[in-house]
Amino acid sequence: MEPVEIIEDGLLLRPWRAEDADAVHRACQDPDIQRWTTVPRPYLPEHATGFVTTISATGWAGGTAAHFAVCDAGTGELLASVGLVSVDRARDSAEVGYWTAPWARGRGVAVRATRALARWAFDTLELLRLTWQAEIGNHASRLVALRTGFRIDGELRLAHPSPGGRPEGWIGSLLPGEVAAAGDPVPYGPGTLQARRAAVFGRPQPVLFATAGDTELRLRALEERDLAAVTRTCQDEQTIRWTTVPHPYRPEHAEGFLRDLVRPAWARGTAATFAVADPDDRYVASVDLRLLPGDPLVADVGYLTAPHARGRGYLPAALAAVCAWGFTTLGLARIEWRANVGNTASRRAAEKAGFTVEGTLRGGVQHRGERQDVWIGGLLPGALA
Image 1 (spheres, helix red, strand yellow):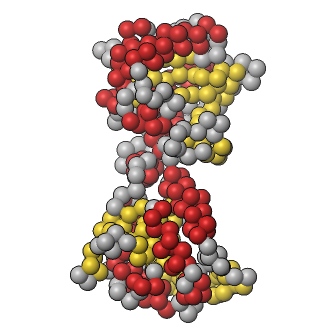
Image 2 (cartoon, helix red, strand yellow; image 1 turned 180 degrees about the horizontal axis):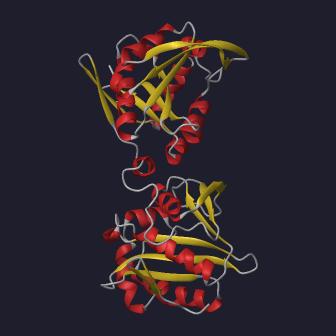
Image 3 (cartoon, one colour; image 1 turned 45 degrees about the vertical axis):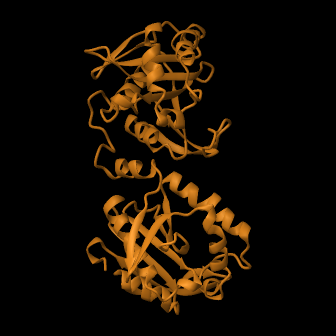
């Protein structure tokens, strides 16, 4: 491939130059670039020099990659990096990669640059497919892909997981004719539900606060130090009776719950599990808020209370705090609660938090090998206790 320049939508995409090395080195000190991309850590000046000279030139010369510096078309300021990697002429396919310098974020640079790159790849190189990959949890990259026109096709296990990162990634694809025109409105733009949730789930889980009587509770991410208390709670006869936790419940179940369910759900943006901690930061309960796959505006809740903490009003206060967060931060329109008929403790907690019991679903749940009736309730934004 011959190096080219692309001018579109206020941006200049051009081949890298040796004099770009200082700006690249400065940009790649950014924690988000180091966290979510494959740049070396620590990122040294020689890495930047090697990228803008040897790596970039070798890709163009061999037809295996097309790396572009993304600059302001008027001032020439470096804003981002975008490019095709793993160009496969046998399959007429390539993978897209990008990062935005921290000083250029919030201006739609990555979206505009990726759209321009995709158009060139389809129109000039006559590729038939572009792919995109990102570690699960990289919601900013996912949002750029969606705004460009990529369809998120699923998940795959990563060949080279990032140190300390998740082993799974999202994968998406883009075909000719699916790229939005330059200047077209950006789907999932600022203020939309997708953008709002990308900003939430792309960061560490927040800490919420609730008050039960004179006790202030902290609602935080579930951690390894909570697992012994979770195990004891799930070995309690009332927990076993009314929930579907494994029985007998062993420490490895709690470890798997945190590793395989709680943390991946936050990374995917599908659920949030809050540990409820007392003033000494000891686990007293947990609350799950799970987004329903069929309706992005609806979630359901589940919760457990440690036996020693029951009857103190902790659960209703914590449940109300999590629901308020769901309404205000995630933009939910409805939160649902379900409990086996007869679980009056769960029902009281839900009603105290503001839920209205709406009826009974006959045979509504599979519980330890049998279909059982369940109560169902709902909470709307204006009905919080």
